[in-house]
Structures are given as structure tokens and as C-alpha cells.
Image (tube, rainbow, N blue to C red):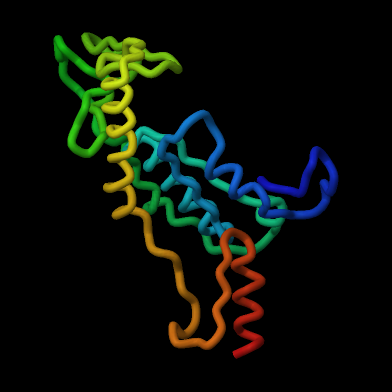
Length: 193
């Protein structure tokens, strides 16, 4: 949950200043997803989405909220647990003698086994690696693995919903916002209409 910085500069106020940091944090370039719920219902459903996207696309997913949303209280209808569909992604169930955890695939998503799964061992570390997970430094391998990671974004872009538009698409004035500013902007929109 975001709040103003640095350190505890304004610990009792909300902020949305970490978006740029979260979009680019980390060494080098790699795909990631950032979700920013605007209310309690979205926090529930986007948390489910975050776990599913992380497992399906095998990449980091960050839920970016702010202090306002974290500490707000509101009455809501019971969350629909039927929305909690679990998608573990592409899992291997059967023994494969030549299992490649980071196999190069057309969509960039490799078949996944769980650590300790019988007959499906693999190596992993924080280093660049080949299809089997062994550390490698050759430029061709590096290019292939980076291309593999970025291919995930093509399928992912089709799955991420478009931004919501509230009000008339022909309005003379538009406000672009994200996260918990949704409530205040919707209220202002109702007043101005």
C-alpha cells in the first residue's frame, strides 16, 4: 500500500507516487503485471486475478493499492466466491525424461512442474539460464530467453481488460485516473452531471 515518502514523511496521508517505480523496478527488463483496484470489490477480484495471472504466465504480478483503500471502511455485498476460479496454468502431470522447465515455446509459456514432482527435476537460480535451468552466459541463449519472456505479453495483452470508461464517450472533458481515486472521481462526476 502506497503512502508519501521519503521514509515516514507523511505517514497518515495516502499517495499514488509509486506507480512509475513499480513499473520499472528490477534488474534489466522483464514482463510484469501491475493491478490497481479502485474499491473493495475490485481488491477481492483482482487478488484472484493476480494469483491466476502469475501462475498462468509465470511472471511477477503486483497489486498496487494506497493507504486510502487499505484503511477505508465500506459496506459491500458478500463477495461472490464463485468468481474465485483457480488457473494454475500449463502444468505437467506425467514423467518426461527430457523435461525442460524453461522450454522455448511459441507463446513463451513453458510447461511447469512443481518442485519435488516425481521424475520432473530441474535446476533454477537467479542467473540467466538455458531451457533446462542451467546457468548460461552465451549471447544467443540470452536473446532466446529474453524473447521467450517477452512473448508472454502478446497473450497477456489479450486477457487484460480494457480501461473502464464511466460516463459519455462524447464528453468534452475527461479525467484519467487509477486506483482508489475512482470513488472521488465518480462522486465528482455525479455532482457535475
